[in-house]
Length: 200
Image (cartoon, rainbow, N blue to C red; front, side, top):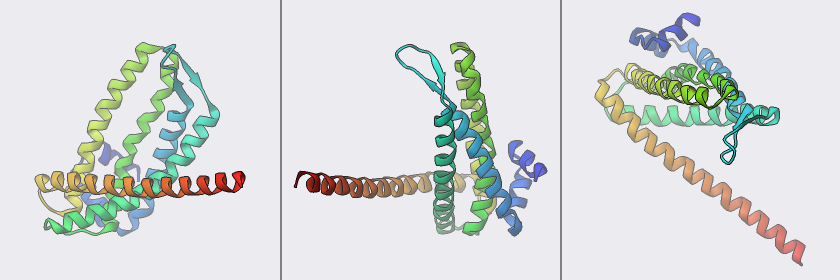
């Protein structure tokens, strides 16, 4: 598994292909996703910035909540995104399935471990700027890894992988907004009913 993680980090296309083809690697991909998201969510929630003072503070509760929510949302998003990716890829002539997309996109989440660097922001604003730059570079590498993963899983060109990723991102955005809107309406309805009951 470590060999595969290194292959993903170094953007080794052959490793992405190997991961996509290995039906037993879905559990490994899920493990990478969960661990990376736990780390990212924990350290992301651990350090908070005060826009007014420009200072930072530590919140253990924020870290735990960030880690738990991060994993739940990441797992749900992972499954939905993989399904959408395979649907779009196959529509564009690719040869893949949801499992292959789950494997390659799950492994790509290893880049999220960069979130651990948020702790360095406690040392000062200068380090926070450096962390931001490192985060940008890693974000670009993650995007490249994502595109390589889609390309290798679907067995088509980089151009088609880019188009697939763009269309899938738009579809995922619509799904998230729709689900978020539905949840908001339900909550508002429940609060309205509760308010009406309290008023009555």
